[in-house]
Image (cartoon, rainbow, N blue to C red; front, side):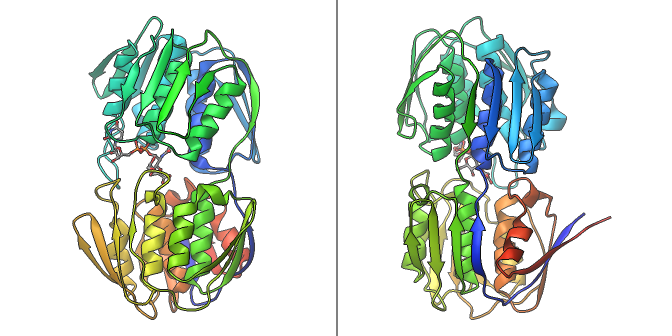
Length: 418
Ligand code: EPU
């Protein structure tokens, strides 16, 4: 297995370009199952999850070809309605094919995603919503089996905003008979991006990006091209890389408006930021101040930036409290950071971090995608060598992270495993 090896303690300087958003690319790809012909998708991140979604679509009979950051999809018909366990267990976002399959092809057999390193992550909202739209949903032998003739519009309320839940039901409702209203919907920019793509294809969605999304069903969609929005979590990770190494970094091709909560918290901790239209310039004047953070659904502070922010707070001055309200066990990086000398205490769903002047490099193990990023950032700031293993998590969602950090002067390399 590959490892990332970092010689820490060097300030990052320079410019780095953001790739397309993984969490936009995945639902956009899944939505091509709704049919409509040919799609040319650009600014697609070259990450393993996108390849996995392409493979899943291929198994269903949708032709997907990738060429760098451009993906061409031919969605004329399908040959299967089953998303098998062996694939779904490698990527939970596979559940995004459920809504489109039922809406367009009348049936879906999708493996129920199992447990996950960051929390239990049920899909009950997706299933209850499909039932409200008139589908028959059963769980059999570990699979979700959903069938419907034509879905019917309905009012659906989310107890908690769910990103992929909102996306799945929005996609299903696009071809339903009548109007669907999603209430207390998630408001992430990736949901707006998906809605924009669907509307280009003839869907009638209003309110995406707010907590009430209204979808007027149509009978068919047509082909369209789309440029995926920048990845706000990747961009945020580079900002923290600049901050944690007390450097000066310009993040290009990003949308500052998608990252406000993070920018507020970075400023609060003492970072200087200059926001331009599609660029953020960061300067970290020295050691930062401890800052409290609470993860929340968008536009709150993203849970996908929590591990990186904990790493930053581990070298800030004073005490900070980071509260995780989205996923119950998303603190697997904490024990690893402690191995690097961090002073962090877990208290239920929050961590209390007492910043240290320096961390020390150590061999550490990544447990999920964002934890990997947090450990790499800590490694960039630490004295000596950090070896991060299990980096396959990282490759699921960051495009060429080590190359981009190298270009900023980070002493980081990938050691190929056998
Ligand atoms: N929830 C339920 N029932 C459901 C669905 C969600 O109880 O049916 C709960 C979850 O357990 C959680 C909360 O609702 O407590 C929110 O979860 P959500 O459904 O929004 O998460 P998700 O859609 O499974 C997406 C991202 C995650 C990101 C979360 C939160 C994609 C493909 N994944 O997951 O991204 O952490 O939203 O913002 O969009 C990542 O990229 O590293 C990642 C994990």
